[in-house]
Amino acid sequence: MADAGTLFPAPGAPTPENVARAAQAQWAATVTSGANWFYWIAGLSLVNSALAFFGSDRRFVIGLGITEVVDYVAKEAGAAGGIIPLGMNVLIVGVFVLFGFQAGKRSKAAFLTGMIVYGLDGGLLLLAQDYLSVAFHGLALFYIFKGFSASNQLRAVESASIAAGLSPGPLKPE
Image 1: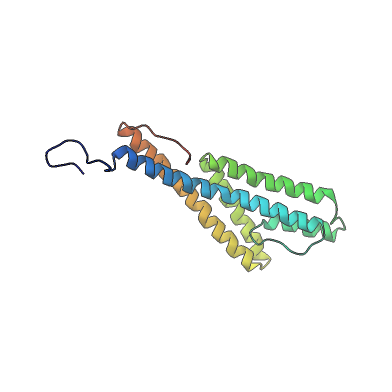
Image 2: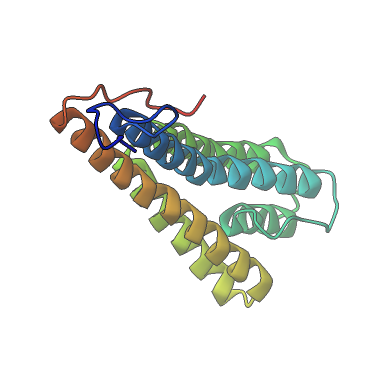
C-alpha cells in the first residue's frame, strides 16, 4: 500500500501488472488442465483397445465408448485380433489428441466440439447402461468445461491488461 506521504507503493505491495500476470497464470493453468483431459481420454481409450486386442476383458472407465463398440463388433465378427479394429480406434483416439492439442492453444472450437463428441459418447454408454463410465464422462466434461471457461476468462484478462497499458504477458504457465 502507498504511504500517506508518497506516490509509490510500499515495497512488496502487489502492482497492477503483477496482479494481472498472476490472474493470467491461474487461468492459463486451468486451460491447460482442461485441455489435458482430452489426452487422458485418448490415452486410456488406446490402452482399452490394446487390452481388447490382446483378449483382455479389463478396461478403464474414462475411455471412449465408441472404441469399445468397435472392439465388440470386431470380436463378434471374429476379428478380435485383427489390425483393422485397432486402426479404427487409433484414428478415433487421434481425433481426441487433436482436440487436446487445439484446446491447449485455447481453441474454442476444439473445446466445444470435443465436449459435444465426448458427451455423445457418454450417451452411447448410457444406452449400454454403463453408469460408472457415464459418471466419469460427466466428471471429465466438468473439468474440460472449466478449461473452456478459463480460456474465455484468460482472453478477458489479456484484453483488460492491454487496455490498461500492460503487456499481456505469457500465454502459457511456466
